[in-house]
Length: 253
Length: 326
Ligand SMILES: Nc1ncnc2c1ncn2[C@@H]1O[C@H](COP(=O)(O)OP(=O)(O)OP(=O)(O)O)[C@@H](O)[C@H]1O
Ligand SMILES: [Mg+2]
Image 1 (cartoon, rainbow over the protein chains, first blue to last red):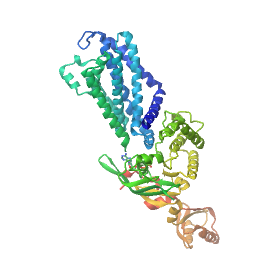
Image 2: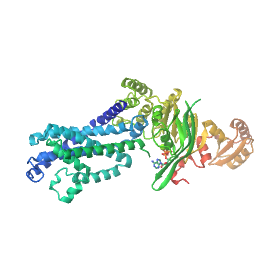
Image 3: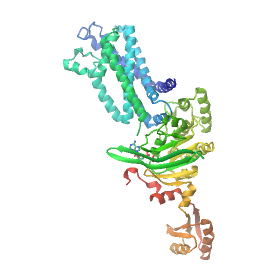
Image 4: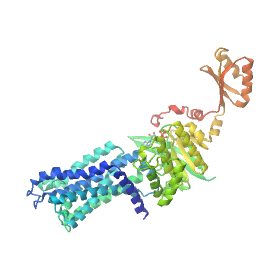
């Protein structure tokens, strides 16, 4: 009860902050659309290739774009944390009796909202262009990806609290972002990849999310791969939330 | 009087690049309820580190601290309800307006919206925030922002308020205003623990002062006590340039009773005397006998600067960081 209220207050604070930076809202909406406009046409040529089973290119490509939006939506959290460490906001909030978990959830829920908004726009825009989402599957998919955004947001926030410097944070985040997204086969499914690469992909937690996402968007819900995707993603979310909360609790030095 | 802050043997050591920085090395504090207590010291003395330990932000390495009757290490949440902190870096949320900042702060302490609005209105009045409180905080001047931050620290009527360098970066006019507001708070009974580099500030605001240097308290007492401990007062006189040589005047004044020292310095003479009120008449008589005319004469209490110099062997202005310390 008290926790829910604190989370609501702190999420509103973050949402308001984002809302007042219209450039961010704008970029958040346009970047995913650019993938559709500038990249999807290239893929049309691949229709019928392995990994594009039914010939509907967008059915394979779009879940990947949604995963990318979800992953990217949480990544910025650490930057905000460092800015607020420098201006003393986090210190001020930490002197209040507010739960440390609520302090974290403010930015996590804001990021989740900032994933859902462009995701829905992209889905709506793609439907006239031969995208065939399954309603139940897509709703489940969005739930899965909200978990992913929460995980990346918490992870980035924890790193921000740990590293305390924009430059180190940027190095770690961008350094990991590329291998993680490439290995997961986000833009092109790994069915096109050689065996060793497919093997390596299994070490990337994001891989399981992406695999589950592709199935979900076609309406396959009761499936082992989907279960695996949920298990890995939810596990990751729990771990990163716990880590980031611990960081807020100590935020020593 | 009950104690608002009691700390015993507080210590904090930071590990930085294979080196240990002993930021706080055994600090004892006792601040009574309703008192304004100034924690005075140069850069790197350990002021902020001490405040962060007392306000639950930093784990205490060893020692104990009670604030408003609560053991800070054992029950940080209870302590947080009773204290307010205006940190060195301020902490206003710059993307939000002043009023949004205030309302959120009140609600995070558990007030309902209406109560928070009432309290915010009081503080907007007290700190004269009305003109800009509905603008976003990133547009504020330094002084406006500082006032907002002070109001934020007071939204929940804390029993003990910690102010870490509240006037740093303010112009003299804003500093004077802030002093006035801190005095108002003192009258309302809030216990205030403030850190500062400025001796004038400690002298003007505080009932008691602790001087910290290299993580230790080197002197403590009321400003008057500290000066008295240093004992004597200073007289500085400047004779007219044409007359008797200055060394000769100094030698003559040195023979007066109660004069401890008379040093010529840059065309003036600095006297250290035990009791200025009794020395002055004799001093003036002596000058008249010898027909020495004066350009100026001042009698000064020893300042906290002198106390700092006497206690640490260094002037407050030219101290380096702890890093270079022994
Ligand atoms: N997180 C930290 N890690 C390492 N060293 C630290 C840390 N925080 C403070 N220190 C060191 O501890 C010492 C005391 O710092 P502190 O901030 O308490 O000084 P201060 O008295 O508040 O100084 P100032 O007047 O400059 O604010 C300094 O040498 C500082 O470099
Ligand atoms: Mg400091």
